[in-house]
Amino acid sequence: MAHWKDAAVTNDGVEMLNEWMAGRFIRITSAYGGTGTVDAAFLTEQTDLVERRQKLHLLGEEDNAEGKTVQIQVSNAEVMEEYELNQVGVYAKLDPERDPDAEERLLFIMQDQKGVTIPSAMDASFMLELYAMIGITNNGRFDVSVSAAGVVTMAYLREFMARTLQAHNADSEAHPEIREQLANVSANNDSVENAVAEVDARLTLLELMYRTQVSGNPFTVTFDNMDSLLVTGVWNAAMKRVEF
Picture 1 (cartoon, helix red, strand yellow):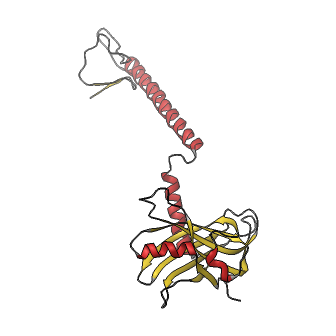
Picture 2: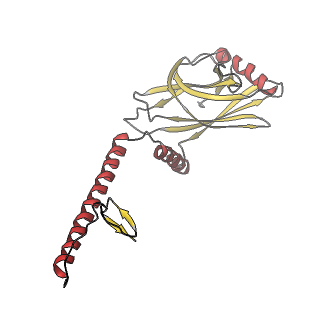
């Protein structure tokens, strides 16, 4: 038995696509997978899935002369309990930029009477890509054809992981505890460096005082502060020295 042989543009979808053909913009907004089926003849009347089970990933959409192609990814990364995937619904809005309150409606639906078992993420890894092509038939009606691409390719997985890691690294809110620890380490390092510099300065002073032959009146100058001192250079107060 072929999978996903039942697919249809819903009545709401036909209305939106007619507006799209007239020049309005359709924004694909979400996709969901669910359990349960209806008679194939009633798919066009659905406004939602029989029972939603998980939100799916929309990998992209493309307009062309023959219609609109939508790429959907089914993953079990966040699935806590195994279920049977029978329906996939794709939802859209008309001109959301011009109308922020535009209603999200079921554009088209795919159905598999036999179903695809989606395992729990604790049991196994699962990933499937579906390509849905919304085209216009010879009699002017909208039609949906679906093909399953199988398990995601390693190349796409690497690309997806790279994008995910890049977004994660750029997120200023990611791992706040680690960021705080790094800030503390940086501050402590600055303190350690200042302490080492101070000890080094004291040792240098001692060497000057006791290893240098002085025939006149000895005196000692430190640069903890610049009171009563006139020097040419830049005073580095933190390091207690004058730099030239």
